[in-house]
Length: 311
Image (cartoon, rainbow, N blue to C red; front, side, top):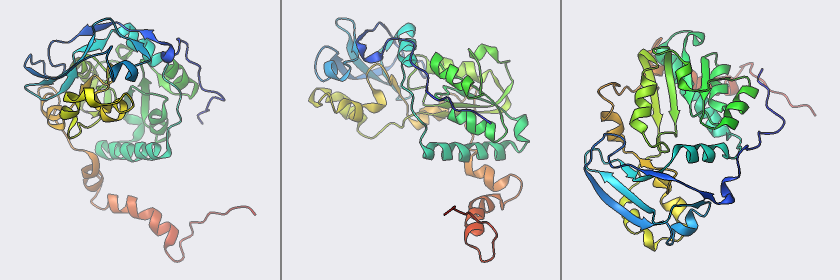
């Protein structure tokens, strides 16, 4: 049984809120499809409001601008300036510990049950990688369901925390053999990385034929382009909410669904597994039984499914 540490790990790097001097590099092409065609939606100086106050944890280089482009081919939004790798590492090293809300734990259970139904093999034969594992709850749920799971995160403290929970944690994806995985969970990662297409290509090499790569990123909201064009009218307090999907220097990519489905088509074919798997694998009655069993066992007359509270 997994053991939860008495106290979460302390960040080993200086707190991010201590005014970190950042260094950046520039991206001249769309990081998703590689096209040089672009329309600039926002070009605002970091030393002017509202950005000066909105990114108060950081000290950008003099003259750095929050320049956001929309790709002319796939319509991905991307920031031209992104943090250098060492600064990004420092940022994630100081990510605060947070308990996973119950709703997310329940969703992980649902999601992994669909994965099990899709492959229709014993759980112990399904090899899973959670890339960007955070504090390890997805891995814990997968292990509880019997899957052969390992995790990775850029944050060293998160990796150490995962090991303390009994999770098999890798130091880098190269630790895994190419073609060895059935399922890769890529949850809320690609919006942060400077080369998302390259990362997906690297991870896809780890999949077996027929393996599944799940990508989940923030949805592109309606009106985000106009908000970027009117950034000077926003207050510093509004920036994290109004521009969350393309937040300065943190969420550096903002994807649309069509681009996610089509850009990868040369190596990965879009495949809907979710409810289809529950309906059609091992008989058409699986989903009604899964959803209906708790109701039946709790409320059917004569059902011996009982809970007791001591008085």
